[in-house]
Amino acid sequence: MNGVRDTFATVYDHLKTLPENERFINHIDSGKWKHCSRSEFLETVRYLTLAFDARGWRNKQIALVIDPSVYWLMIDYALMLSGAVSVPLFTNISTKNLRFEIKVAGVEIAFTQTQEQVRIIGEANPDVVCIDIDATCTGCVSIETMSREGKEIDQKSPQRFEELLYGITPEDVITIVYTSGTSGLPKGVELTQLNLISQIHDTGVKYKFDLHKDTALSFLPLAHIFERMVMHFYISTGMSVYFVDDVKNLGVIIKMVHPTVMTTVPRLLEKVYAKMQQKAKEESLLKRWILKLAFYRANHKDIDTKNGWIDTLLDKLVYQKFRASLGGSLRMIISGGAALSPDLNRFFFNIGIPVYQGYGLTESSPVICANAPGENKIGTCGKHFFHTEVKLSSEGELLARGPGIMHGYHNNPKATKSAIDADGWLYTGDLAKIDDEGYITITGRKKDLAKTSTGEFISVEYIEQLLASSGLFEHVLVVGDNKPFVSVLLIVDAHNGKEKIASVAFQKEIKRLIKMINRKLNEWEKIRNFHLSAEVLSIEAGDLTPSMKLARDHVQERFSDAIEQMYEGHI
Image 1: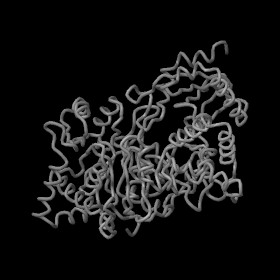
Image 2: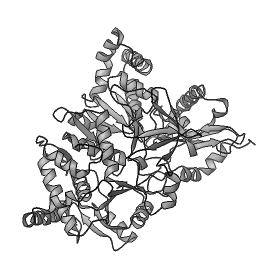
Image 3: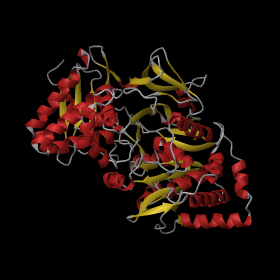
Image 4: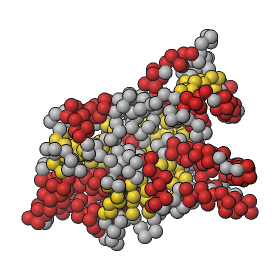
């Protein structure tokens, strides 16, 4: 790979020069690990590319509605090399959004995994041809069949694959990625070869990996552009990648694989922290005292301060066990997708697991800035990627420009024009600060600045982050727009939620938490009331996006009665 103007054809050629890796891409199939070598991966991608080309898929929209696996990556790669346009869709997407995206994206072919997916897609558009990767769908073409077709083409016309690679240009649109749609229907973001290649190059500037020593673990959906881009970066290094079949099995698999790196969202780190605290409460009196000291030290110690004897002792007694619960070999976790609490970030650093926070949007392919080894400041999202420019608007909104900025919204020139100005600056919609060293801090979502009925502005996301980082709640929704004061809707785990809500001790714990958080807030931002619920929120019902973010408007409507009760008696 030579420069930012490369394409995935260049990445393919680069991969051929790397040493063989027998366990290049790995996923669980029927309860057992299925391993794919680097050479097997490249060979199958070659055959699938030829098969897709022979079927005339160039410039056609092809949906991927399958779980993360080596098949997902092979298909994605082959679509990019054949000139097709992939439309990755979440397998847990709501039926409403799946139908919407299949229709508006103009999908003609879909790779599927279940009969239910075939049924829903058929209802959205009966003309969509479904290809079953597991060969379990009656009447569907299988991935094995297509691979054999490509092999036959390769034997008859061995020059065809090179012709296809030669025809790829950086400006080719290769994918349409749908945004989460937290406040409405999702928009299709068109990304090009250049967009993703620039991200791979810039990721390589900030993070260094050794294909012989590093192993990546992946549990986030590949339909999410963050994990997908990072995955293509991992592939470009030749290192081993392991997929988690179900996030519920993460705890077991992480100890089995012993990864050195993984990407995550803050919610998982919050859950890990809460679980560590819960286990600490179940220990004997002496152990509880030691653990309390260990948590306090990890939560408050400046990460740049040299370790003393107390840190060495706590590491031997406590922190080593914490690291072992996460595989024991992690040298880096990269967090994105949402704001990471500085306290949580500090905790993981101090127990010996560096967590580097980044920031970006689907529209920027996705990373705009990120912390990294040797260039990290807790509480910020790091410095901008090498080929990305950033600046603040007069209103404090973060703007970004560079080769990672999207081609535009699919079939929506009006929305594209409102997002990217004539000079190529993307308006992120996020308010930010940039310090003298170039570190970027996101201070809130421009549209999530609620305005109380007294005329004061509050940062909804900031308050939600403070509450969520406690690990006590599944979801948090701050209410305050056009209201006399700030209230919060707190959703607890439905498993034992009713018992928690009825617990006087739990109610007191929440009140103590809110009192502590209120000390960090302006008077008009302080939380005055809260409502607890153990109701189950789901993607299918429209409460959550596929990336598990709250669909704010929908949830506020669903809990409108409870919200109104928090303001009873107030003018």
